Amino acid sequence: MKFLLSCLLVVLALRVQGAELGAQVTDSKGGPVGDAVVSLVPLDAPAPPVAPAAKIEVAQENQEFMPYVTVIQAGTRVVFPNRDTVQHHVYSLSKPKKFELPLYNPGEKESVVFEIAGLVTIGCNIHDWMISHLLIVPTPWFAKSGAQGAVRVEAPAGRYRLELWHPRLAKLLTKEVVLVDGSAAQEAFTLTLKPDRRVRRTAPGKTTGY
Image (cartoon, rainbow, N blue to C red):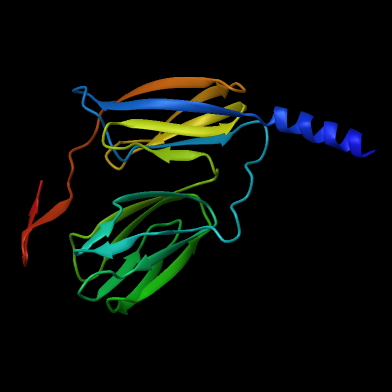
């Protein structure tokens, strides 16, 4: 009996052997695009639920949110630590999760659980230039591009709906992909991005747009 059980476990392990998808994201001028999120939504079976204790941080540092773009699986708790020297009032009016964390002091932290997939834009009621994007996806298989525009996602073999999002992209890009055990698929995306309308500080008490 133990021998049969061991054989079954080996077979199951082989069946869930991982695959990999790599992507290169560039803009219309050929430059690399950072902060592009690639997620893989399974088409043939439900995505596994988020781990009960899953959490991630979006900090307040130097009167900015860090990081600017965060991606999580639905059901994840996000902790908002104030690592600044001033108070902050964090809030969002986005449909997937409207919330407000009234004024709290340096060294303190608050947290919120985000249960519904979608985009939540976060701001500070005191510092208008502070903004952060939280993309909530219904899958544990996702990644964000770095400064060189490269993304790598590991997932079990199978069919997926690949979704690509960026804060300056007019609409979500989607396509079906198939991942094969032990293989590495490769995709390339050229994005037409909207102008960056963020407001940035140039000096204490001053802001500028670009």
